[in-house]
Length: 260
Ligand SMILES: Nc1ncnc2c1ncn2[C@@H]1O[C@H](COP(=O)(O)OP(=O)(O)OP(=O)(O)O)[C@@H](O)[C@H]1O
Image (cartoon, rainbow, N blue to C red; front, side):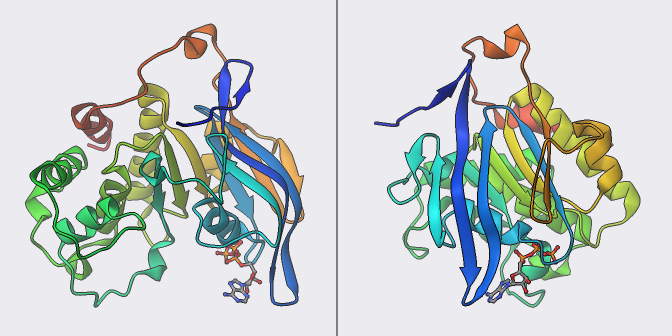
């Protein structure tokens, strides 16, 4: 049974409660308190080394806070198991370009979560991969090696991988690094559309101040050390109605249409 925390009409999707993180003796996150509410779009800005990636890696369970607590959908990270509810696109430069996987294999790996990568996939799971490829309009690239694709195409592959489980929370770590300005602008149009029309909650690290401020507002709503949080809440009465949060891949494909 999932626990759900509420704040007004919005559930708390990520709750960060007095969190510290240190690598050996270097403290990177220093007593952070922050809440991401349902359907928020959070932009995380900070100088190099400010701890942005560290924070996202803690939220997706890859690093453990040195002190303090993180809850996901109201559940402490230590007992949280519903990883399908979260899509994560790590920093692109963590990919080895020689990695010999096809696009379909990379997208399908989004299904494994923390489970055994080598188990056999069911027909239903394989069809989810087809749906995610279709949603990102990369079905024609399915059998190509990921390392042979352009930066913009790779970005769609990683987004398809993150979307394969139809997540409620999408976490993106500098998703447009190394991509030309036009493709970047199209990418931001697409995720804005996904946020507005499919009610996905977003957390995104970006160095693109203009994009962050134009969508999320001029002022950071919170600062902690060198980290700044820019947030767009969705607080209209309509947002507070109980609605079906699931979005079909067909609908997500519509978000991709705004790219063209
Ligand atoms: N595995 C590690 N071991 C030791 N120190 C680390 C490790 N990973 C990161 N750091 C250090 O922790 C600090 C925060 O790193 P992090 O990657 O979270 O920063 P960031 O804000 O994402 O930076 P950037 O904008 O450059 O991506 C940096 O000083 C970095 O050198």
